[in-house]
Length: 257
Image (cartoon, rainbow, N blue to C red):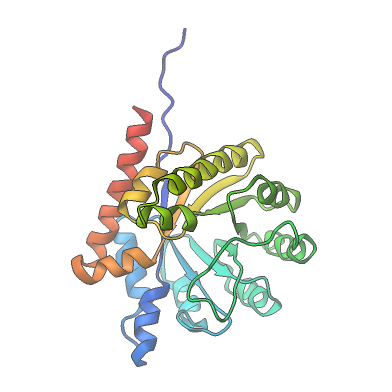
C-alpha cells in the first residue's frame, strides 16, 4: 500500500488594487498609485495582480492598465465586462488573464456572477477571441452546476466562484445560511475539477474566510481586494498581504495534515 502524501501546490493569491485607485480618484491627482500598491503586494507575497477597468472608470483607468502591464513582473488579471470596447483594450494590453464579470453602473461592487446559461451566445465570441490571443479566460460565476456546465460548454478554461453570499452570511452571523452557502461552494469546486476547469474564488473574503476556503483541494487561486486595501489603512499594505498569505497557507496545511 502506498502511503505517500500528495502535496498540493499552494493556492495563489491575486491582489486586486482597484480601491487604491478609488482613493486616488476621490481627490484627483496621482496618489495613491495603484502601480506602487501592486509592487508592494507582490513584494509581500502576492502571486499576481487583479484590476477591473469599469465602463465608467470609477477607479482603475486605461493608463493604470498600461502601466501595470508594462511594470509588474507577475501575472496581470484584467477584470472586464464582455463589451467590444473592453475586448479591444484587452487585446491591446495583452494581460496574462481576463476575467469576464457582470457589470452595472448602479452597483457599488459586483453583485453576482455572470449569466453564463442565458448569455451563452454573447459570451462565446469573447472567450474565443481572447483565447486566440493567448490570454487565459476566466468567468466569474455563481457556485452552481448549471453555470459550471455552461462555462465548460463555451470552453472557458477557468472559473472564479463568487464567494459573496457565503462571506455576507458569515459576517452577519447567519450560521445556517453560511453553512449552506459553503456547501454550495465546496460542491461547485469539486464539480469544476470534474469538468476539467481550473477553479478560483473571490469576493468579500477576509483573513478568516480565506483561511477556511483555502482548505478546498480544488481551489487554485483566491482574488482579494477590498478587504486588503481597507486593512492596509490600519496595518499597512505589506502586512495586510503577508497576513492574508499566512491565513491561506494555514488553511491549506490544515486540510493536508
